[in-house]
Image (cartoon, rainbow, N blue to C red; front, side):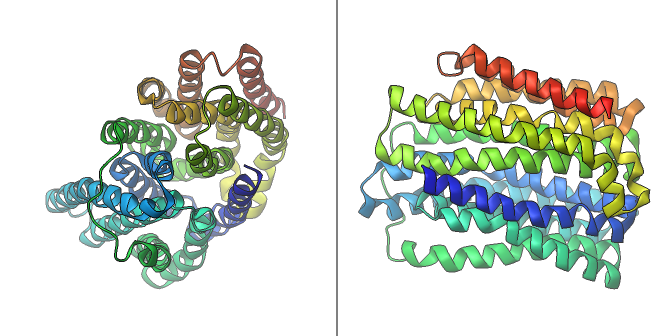
Length: 425
């Protein structure tokens, strides 16, 4: 566990470095309104990619390592081809919707804008599939480096393209970043899959598991990425959408560090056949360790970032402070939600996770409708916090034999601590 988790955490640390630039340098150059439009497009691409990611990395990582090593490339290829059909359908639907919007309101939905968003979506969907195959086959390093590379291309490409071509150039930068990581992933994955059969018997329950986990992943992305879109639609402010993108982006970056540790450890647990108390004990140890590490980080961020973000991104981002506290309060809940997801996968019980994520998404949507029109970015961040609390509570109840009361109480208390520190400072 130590090696895979360490590689995953290092990858997320590198991603954090690039994310700092993405939420400071890029907003400074684009301005709040320009960055808000860019962030809305990036959120749409992320949401669409999640909708197409049938089962996500958990699907392949749970089933491919369970077969003999010699049979894994064939199974990974078979699962990839099966998943590709669904992804192609989602991309086709997105292209049709973009075409309809462009024809109906060309002033608001320009042809180039729709073209670049759809192109970025297609490339991102393909890249996600390639990297999921890599992770299932043991490519932890490649999986961990995807977003540091993708964010790095965004940081370099978006300002340059924006300077030359305006907002459409910034959107082209999103497509460029997805295309670069797709090319890198193909170089690493094509070789082990070459010559393997396209068809391979699917493990029992794999298709059902993928469908349920795919729906769960979509609900999670609605919860995580919907805030920026909600501000743009319900508050009608690209500036506030930019504030929401910064606050929620910081919180999600810290959250995904925790999720990454659990994600890269899943193939090991699946391959080893660990079950019962041994697997539960491993998950508990990682969850407590993650909680012990993220609480001081989130607390420090709550104290410092409302001053640090304007210093780095510019005084125009002074208003971001109102949304930072609620957003950062979700971070201490990441170990709890990660542990519930892990045990759901190992026990092949996707329905409790589907219920938890659906409840979380519904609570978020209800809160966003109530709060965003009046409170904009702060309302979106609060809706994210409420939805995450609901997701964590349902997950804790579903797997209460693993997630003992002390850990659950400590997680929610830590979230309250971060929120309180932010309000106090």
